Length: 312
Image 1: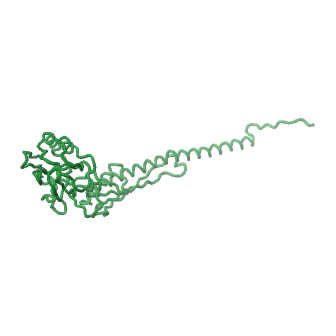
Image 2: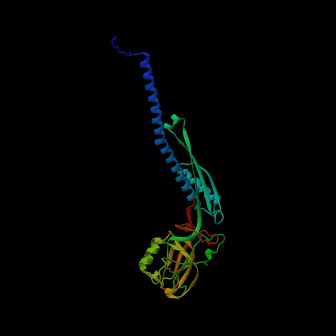
Image 3: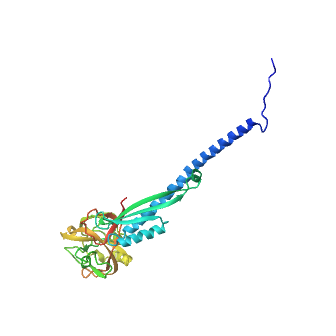
């Protein structure tokens, strides 16, 4: 039997070169896979953040624009551009449309380029992210943070057309409107007397619950004469407040009721409190955007108080 012979591959031999080449190919393929995973984990995450940032910017622009609606479509477009610029730009279009009443809705679209990093190895230099948002302004159907003083719908400054007479000095009468009723309303829906401390809190902060349209009991008595209520009025001088607007009344005393049909923004500049007669709030009506639920009815009366919300 002939002796066994060992076959050794010397450095630089063709067989060793083939093995080295195969290792390089495997390593390169592995690196490509790693870069693909990195692109998926890093670049896709970066693109998602860019998409969310653009959506937030478009949402903010739409909400800002809706604050000028429905009265000022041109102002709405300018506000959208301003807010879009402050939040990184990228707005494409701003369109004012009609949903419930004329020019009550704004639609904003945006587009940005989001660069790639590891994905460039795969031939993807960047992607485009897109966003769209719609916001609507509506008269209030339910209001939060309202104050307890009622305003007669027939007030002269609410009769101006097409909108109330804003920022013109006027007075709100607090004298008796019915038996025991001094235009102080139980805006929380309760019946009977409310303590001066609670009334003062409603004046300073507003009622924290949502106040829907409908009938509300009067808080009987001239409670604005209390020091707590006067101190609360002092604290709110010069700031916007939201007062319920009533159309009809009936009853007497604690059973006296107001039919609330809307809300109006009002700024108190001074007041005259002197017993049970000749009591007034001095100031002016003001257009306000307020926290609440917007009306879905085109027939809802508008006294200059609006709720703004995203609708898409």
